[in-house]
Length: 400
Image 1 (cartoon, rainbow, N blue to C red):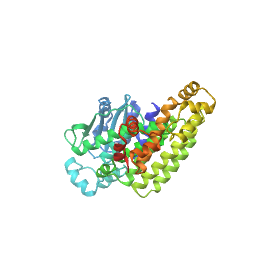
Image 2 (tube, rainbow, N blue to C red; image 1 turned 45 degrees about the vertical axis):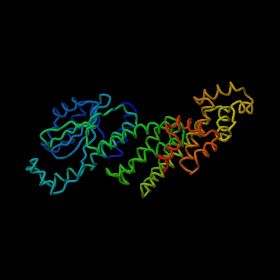
Image 3 (cartoon, rainbow, N blue to C red; image 1 turned 135 degrees about the vertical axis):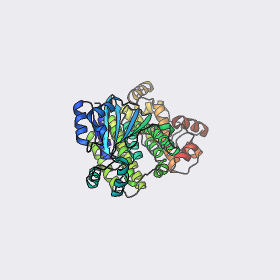
Image 4 (cartoon, one colour; image 1 turned 30 degrees about the horizontal axis):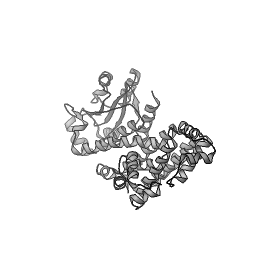
């Protein structure tokens, strides 16, 4: 099993308190059915029936199963590996529920105390929360999974229906649209963390934050935000690992953030703590990556980082001060940074401009001058090329 899938399954277990089970052999299937079948009403957990169900799994469909005792399972197929997430429940049951639903399902030979005790051992997770976490974790750990449908297999009914995600209610449409939009932003967010681009990473993070108002309508709580913070923390850990940051540093910064999130008493504070983590990881990645650069490249980076406000900043002038030829400087810098010094200068200017747009009330003209570009029209053109929005649009949509 690939590393990313293992990471995803471990994270799902941590977030949901439900252990995902790989069902890749008859022995694993037999053990699963034996351990989870409580009553003969759970006929689908008989080995022949369960095996047949697993054989019908489609990699483009997520299967949400409800058995006749109202216990739930999620079945998915990833890289031809059947995986079951469950059992869990989507609602609490009371004695009254047992009596009411028992008449419908035929619980005649079930003892209410035994039934309620059986269900009480499973975590209670809402349908939407379960799907949100599974979709987000699989996508953000780069697991190859493209779910186009959620098929609800409900054994409490005579039949079950295929639910096309795009044909659900308007609220669900909005929900899935938000999640899909987040995926794109999160991938860019991970890339910016990997490169130590603090300002760009913060912008991506705040883009994700813009959907909080809607998410509250579908059940976001401070507990759920802690779950969201754990997902963000995992994205950052994966990105930092790809950037080559030592595992000890990753664990130290991650553990510190975990403590801060647990001590946070409001959703707003959780967001602040996450931004602190982004800054700390980007700083650590920058410091680590600087070790692999030559003195020439480090000098050019330092010079541009501190002198970008100069309108007439020329590469030839930097080369002259370093006592090397312009060709050598450009070749060495491009080899180590995968971009030319001029492109790096533009990147630094745009990142600083984006920060000023979000944190100050300076005009576009003033910010243009402050980052070393005297022509405001040219500044707007460069900014839109970098961020896909004009400075005015950027400030309107991303300023808190």
